[in-house]
Length: 228
Figure: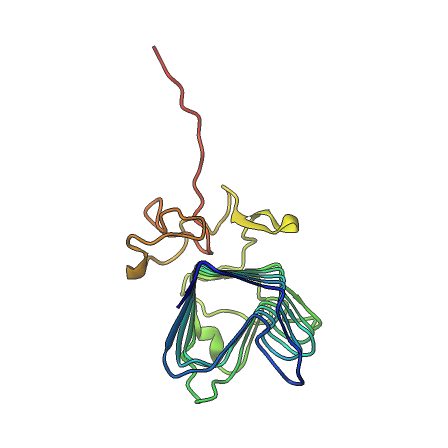
């Protein structure tokens, strides 16, 4: 397990190499939680993350400003039974498809990837069609309650997915928290692991009865007025 770490400014520089921040290939379970994966690069796929593990999970992580120099998957490339849960994937770049996420055919032939409660927005690519998400085969069926503007890589209907602007507080400054008017507030799917769990900022993972999409819970501030 890797918890609460910053993985930043790393590079995978040999030919056809992937996973600038993390490259994982194992048959065991691995968990990455409440981490920042930022400003990493790879010559090939997965500027931030390239994971082939059979049972990996990445939860409450910020994956931003990573680059795939010659291929796809600027933020994340998915090749196995891999779960992205309540992650924010933004501001990444890929030379080819999938500036945010590239979901490819599994090395084992098993397509059971799960992307749930994630924001995949504000990414870019050298491909004119697939800036945020690129899927091969039937991978679009494995997105649930995810916010991603993907006109050319549609997510499955009736699974809580959205193509709306997530309304970040300040995308230009790398603040990927949600504004109070974000459509991602209270729009996720509550899961057992969230009971007693915390978001990236250390707030309760479920704050208003239903989890927010992305790594952060949005807490609406107010003014207390004392009446006589």
